[in-house]
Image 1 (tube, rainbow, N blue to C red):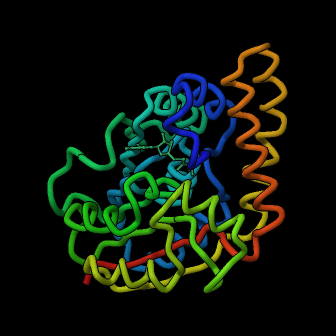
Image 2: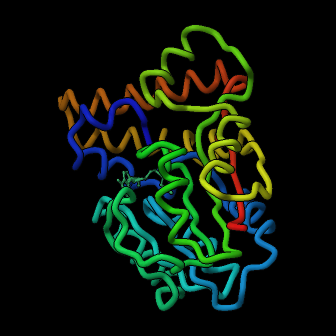
Length: 255
Ligand code: SAH
């Protein structure tokens, strides 16, 4: 989901635009499963929170490949509803509890979850703050697994530096984020960079089809036009500068 435009655009248009695609951020089933493979001590019937779940691609993957009970949370009711439909269609509605909520003020007790999962969403409160806020929700021996946009090199061209400084001022390198994770109390278990296909095939490509239909539904709507143009610019920047940044999966364990 576009980082820079969210405050400037009509939320209902953004929701409509992103409800029509399976993912709202870069990722893939293969990457979710790769991250899951590092959670070697996840118990049977684990309780997993998927925070900023969007329309639920990761929650559905986790439900299909584990026997966990998944609590999926997103700020936008439209996304939560879409996830509920998808969970029913996939026969996992009994193990996915989807609700609206704010990731900065989650209504859960301490030590509730065996794992906190979050793909492409922690940037909304910042990596360091997310790590700190979610730490108490995880029981001793439990896991955190998040993806976040990260710098892959120590320096980068001005155009892409400026784009991310504007979109996500606290974006860190992999080393900085690993350090933030450790500062919050986690032991780093694994990090890996998401492959290109997570951005191209699984994120920008499905949007291209959705963009045409979206603009047809909103002829002459300047906000809709701007939303599409922003997403297209983001995709072009990724094409040009992807050696400098990417989404990184960070997996950590509490103690
Ligand atoms: N995890 C999904 C969605 C990523 S996009 C995927 O990988 O496809 C980021 C998501 O964070 C959006 O669905 C957005 O609605 C949600 N979000 C933004 N601010 C939030 C907040 N304060 N609390 C909970 N969810 C939030």
